Image (cartoon, rainbow, N blue to C red; front, side):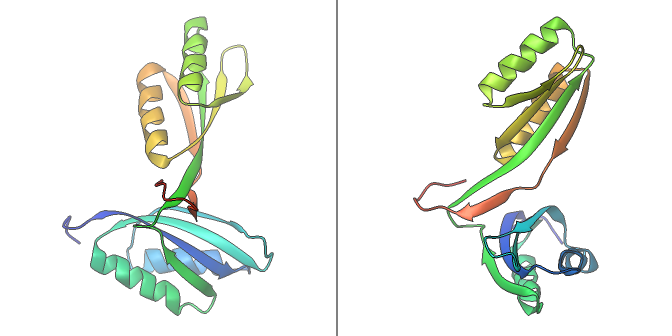
Length: 170
């Protein structure tokens, strides 16, 4: 695959909520050597249906193949291409800052205020921040935190998205 036309793309899937569906879908990606940037899954208002949000980087041709192959799976109810649709999309990010000085703690509180994060845990020499924002903003936060602090631990969930009611973008 060359870099021509490579771009970030999002797919939302409605799937049957049963054992093995997640592994079947992730297996489709690995079996075809498609890259999965993130995959988030949870049940919907209907307990028999789950919704997946998948982020991948590919060219147009490969992306069309991915969608066709997902549509062929019996367990897939519906495939929605979020790439060029107005969606609300967020991901959760936790950053634990360890070995904090008093100045580091002040900096953590300023970062939390700037990025609309929550300080959800606090100890003698550590602070735990929670961010719920776009993946791009979370990338920027991680970059900043790596530059500012000597010891951090990062855990992030994949993005979840829903079609926007108004014409606002992610």
